[in-house]
View 1 (cartoon, rainbow, N blue to C red):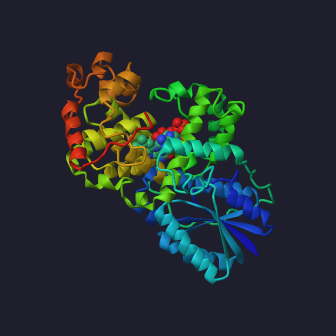
View 2: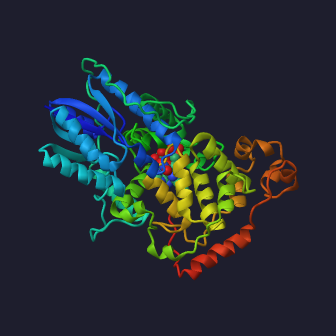
View 3: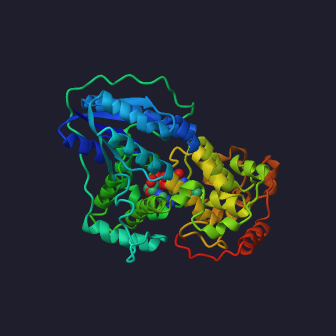
Length: 475
Ligand SMILES: Cc1cc2nc3c(=O)[nH]c(=O)nc-3n(C[C@H](O)[C@H](O)[C@H](O)COP(=O)(O)OP(=O)(O)OC[C@H]3O[C@@H](n4cnc5c(N)ncnc54)[C@H](O)[C@@H]3O)c2cc1C
């Protein structure tokens, strides 16, 4: 008999709960990855994300083969095909059980319910383990037993729990006699360039990046993380999103860098751990409130807002031609690299949803199509935060000003010059002043809107919809 590990968002050998559980059965272990390309398209996965996943599937297939484990890659284009694909696969290989780690989107949850039923009908076991988060969604509750809707109390409760029972890491399975990697289906991901310096492939590369970040930069993270021109953050998000690296390894490395301290010692390490908790929070929200997977706002009252549908304005934002240098440089960074600095994600998100009053779901989809780290929980959480429709939503009257953000976080114009070559030779003063004659002379567009008027417009849209301002927790 054999035990089948169905790899999904856990494309790694190291610290993988499903793989470890399968190896502990003593049965032959066989890996499976289902190419759900039609479903990925429905979920707006862009070419970069598909390339990143595909390259890591190939790397995992090779790494498992070296350990004596076959990883089969089969096409099952839609989630609705998964049940039959697994059933056939398990029958052919005398599978006694399929083990996978949970994913929390509504479609993924539905898929797994169907898969479990199909396997049960054939007498094949099904185990769904919780491996994506440090604490399983559903396990962090208010005193009344409800899911948290606000980050700060969630964080407090999360820390209390995690300190009592700090999750430990599992080693990769022992190397067995190597096997030939099984044949691949005739499938190629859509073409996309993935800069190998930005996004090297493989678990080792992710571990090196984590180690490098935690040696030094983590201690300056509290300051450097807000400066987009610096390499001040870890850039581990794509590896975490597809599970090339476990979040437990990240927490362990951060705690080791901070001598085991959670809330004293290095400010940078503490704040970085907070970001990992934001990741937890949004995954917990996704699981507890499936409506957010279904294009619904977290706050139903915000459904009453009349968002603008303006294709030309949307395109100017997407193409980085708003006339606000920091917003445009952010959007060009996204299209050039598949990644955007967090501060700029907030700024670009607010510019679209607030200054332009365009439906945040258009921005969410655009980010998903472009990001190499595109991930439903964090992307949806970030967009709903920016649009003031979500948990901890910024009160709608708090709108990041593109000019002030540039003065605070790119005052020398280093970042803007890197991504907007057409104005790289303009003076610092000009870069900080949208519409400055030097910018216009360089052929750069005039600002597409008056920020004061735009602010008035969005405030009245929220007021007219009868929306109460929520408390802000992100600052
Ligand atoms: C509008 C918007 C959209 C976003 N879309 C995504 C997305 O699709 N995928 C994604 O992984 N993150 C998303 N984020 C969150 C955040 O911007 C990125 O996780 C971060 O910029 C990734 O860079 P890093 O790995 O260097 O992060 P670091 O600063 O080094 O943080 C470490 C890790 O913590 C997690 N993290 C950090 N900030 C957040 C956050 N605010 N919410 C959830 N997790 C966080 C990420 O896994 C990240 O890799 C979005 C934020 C906004 C405002």
